[in-house]
Image (cartoon, rainbow, N blue to C red; front, side):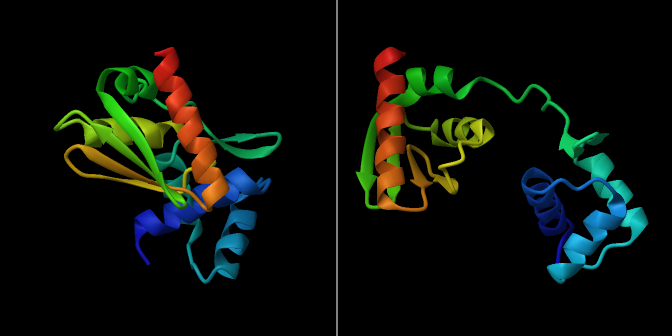
Amino acid sequence: MTKSYRQGQILKLIRNKGISTQEELAQELKSQGIAATQVTLSRDIRDLRLVKTREGYKEMAPEETGPQFSLLAAEFLRDVLRAQNQVILKTSPGHANSVAVALDNEEWPEVVGTIAGDDTILVITPDNPTAESVQEKLLALLENG
């Protein structure tokens, strides 16, 4: 189990449950088969920029991550297609990666993940109806951009 995996699970836990203490966090991780010491959890909390609030640990506002998805999409997105639970985005050559990163940073709940090539992005959604709504959302963004 890698540090990245452990930190990903920590983020998933604090987003979905009200984790208020490192002890609670350690217990939740342990129930998933992930052992972590208090020192490790402290370091992970710092690395992930988590802050303790009344409702539990929360993520701090992200630092500036680059151009917004809507700006990049308006500039480089050429087509939006759908294949079952996947949405395929065609971009100008050489721009798929930056558009995919910007889309990932949007953290749309309906997007499971993206894979980018040179001029194509594969957007994976949980099911066909969700892919259709993502396609409509992206086409609306293009029409308004």
